[in-house]
Image (cartoon, rainbow, N blue to C red; front, side, top):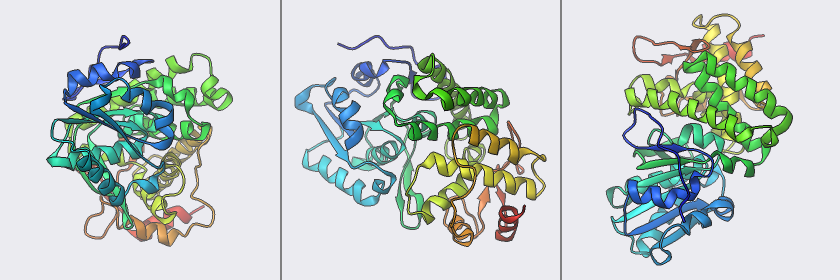
Length: 370
């Protein structure tokens, strides 16, 4: 039986976003309202499937529902896995009257979303994020993609979900390092748009560092912060749905992060890379005279208090990282583009472009200066 679920959040989006403990038990009901269909394809990874996807699939008619799984990890977000999943759907004879339910972290959200965006020119998809990072970032906004050897998220499409269902209660099942990884995107949201929210995330990070998911009132506290992050992202996305201007501020930290991930062959956690990237890009912003003095220290402190790395990995080649920024989808004319902050809660508008071209020499100097 479907459980009671909260009302959708009041957001400037064309699709509903639900957030509340236990709401995953109502996914069947929500999907039937938001994306009625004859068949249901639940796409997950093998780890999440054991924890959540099987019980979610059970909310739909068994004879018209199938669970499709891939191994976990960023290295699985490839065109080969996309082809494997689309072929499996074709073999199942899934038609346009099929809804995709994406159950997992950001990798599954991106991969299953891309499958939905391309299969028979587009199927409805319900995003069910199961990691903190996916809840506050990847599940909202309609960006889907796979990685290539040349860089991250270089093949993809904009494809809005029919609904997003966020159940913070599932975060109790996450390993501590993956849970902490999600704090990076929450810190980012504070930096790009909301200084009081930034402070609230830090207070929560202090409690998390000591208690983890066993912290008092963990679910209630994290739910409030997730809603805050989703509101920040929704406000940005509603104004610029296809990343032509303001939406680029969501890329703060990601030019360096994606370059690091590529150099490391996508090993490690995305949130860790974003944490390093934010500190590095804050340093760049200070070096070129955009940011107020002390911004890098403030962001590094936030990252470290959250248990995240603030420095690029030991032994990594800075030249390789800088070269990898040229392959980022935001690069223009062979020059890397950076969305840079002036202070906590304030981004550089760059005459409405919200991204600044920074030379390799300036990046190298900024990241090697004392």
